[in-house]
Image 1 (spheres, rainbow, N blue to C red):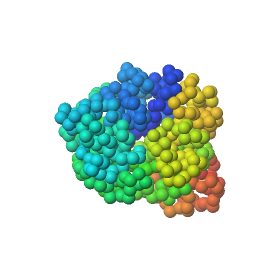
Image 2: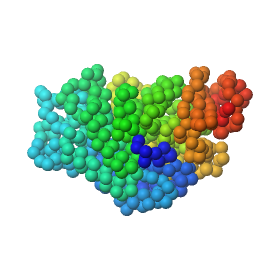
Image 3: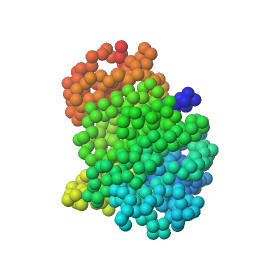
Image 4: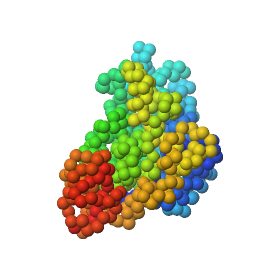
Length: 539
C-alpha cells in the first residue's frame, strides 16, 4: 500500500447485494434507486464505503458474475444515470463506491464470446481459451466449480472452450495482450466516473498455461477432477495482477482481491505493499458443510497467523459474512442478539478494515426454505443434486443445504414488519426470511440495546480511537471456546474478551481494569457469560 493510500485504513466497508437490498419500483428485485433511498440509513450506521456486488448487464445465470457488457448497467438495477446519481449522493455523505470486478470470465452472451465462437479466424477468436478435444471428448479431466466438465463443445469451431465456473461463464484468455488492454480500458472508464475502488472476483486463475494437463486430484462421481488449486496463483497470474496494481496505485484506487490462497508466500504476494498487487485480500473460502467444524481456536489461529504474515507491510480485510457464505450469526453463533454483538466485536476490534455484509448489522439469520424449489442459487441447486446422487435422502440433502446455501445471505433485506419486509410491495425474487416480523431495521433502530445500535457504537469507536486502526495485536492464552487479545497503541492498552460458548463459565481477568469501553452485557466477577463480549481499558 503506497503512502498516499493510507486513507483506506479509515474505511468501514458495507457490502450490498443489489438484488436483495431495496426494491424501489416494485418488480421484486432490488435496484440502484433503492440503494440511494437507503443512503441516509447507511450514513447513520457510520460506514464510509459501499461495495456493490455486480450491477453490469448480465443474463444473471450466476447473479451478475456473468457479465455481458462491462460498460452497461443491468436493466433490472436501473440505468447509468441512476448509477451516476448514486455516486453523487454517496459523495455528499462522504461514502465511496467500490465495484465488483469480474475479470476471470465473461458471460457467453458477451459480444466477444459470440464472435469468438463463430470461427477460429476473427478478431475475437483468441479472446477465450478454445482447445481441440481428445478422442471425441474434452481435452483433459478438469471439472467446473458448478459441476460437470470445465469444457463445453462449440460445433462451429469443433473445439472446446474453458470455463472454470458455469458453462455460461467462459474464461478469458489473459495471455492475449488485446484482452488485457480491453480490461484496463474498462477499469479506467469506471474510475473516470468516480468509482474509488474495486473488489476483484476469482482473480487467482488468470494464467491457464496448464490447460492441457490433467489435474492430479481424485475424480468426482462425474469423472472430473477439481482444477482450481492446480492452477491458482502461479507466477504469470501474479504478473498480470501487478499490471492491475499499476492502475490501482497510479490512480489512488482501493483494491481487494478474492484470492485462492495456498501458502503464506502466496498470501504475501497478493497483499504485501512491496508486491504492488492488492491493498488487501479476501481469501476464497469453500462452502461450510458442518458448522461444528468452525471452532474459536480455528478462528483465533487464522486471524493470528494472517496478522503475523502482514504486520510488517500489508493490510487485512476482516469479514465474517459475505454473499457467498451462510449468515455469521447462524454459522458462528446461535442466532441470538448476544452472539450477534459478540461477533461484531471481533470484526471491529481486529487490525484491518472491517467488511460488514448487508443485514448482519440487524442480526439477520440463515433462512430455512422448505423445498429446493425455493432456492435460487446455482451452486446450491448443483450441490443438492450432488447430494442426492451420493445417496442422501431429500430430507438429508435439504438439511445440509440449510446450513451451506449462499441464498442464506441473499434473502431480501428486512426493513420493517410489513408484507415482504418493506423490501418490496410485491413478492421478491427470493422469499423473505419469515423472521422479518421480529428482525428488521425499524425495530432495531427503536431499540437502544439492539444489534444495530451496538454496531453503530463499534463503528464510532473505531473511527475515533487510533488503537483499533494502528494498535499492535497480541493474543492471550485462554480457555477453549474463548478468544482473548490485547490491542496496544502508545501508552494505551485495551483487552478484548469474547466467548463463543452458549453457557456461563468461570473466567478470571488477570489485569487491572481502568474502565469498560464497551460490552454486550455487564461483566460478572470471575464469570464470563454466554456469547459475552468485553472491550476493557487496562493498566
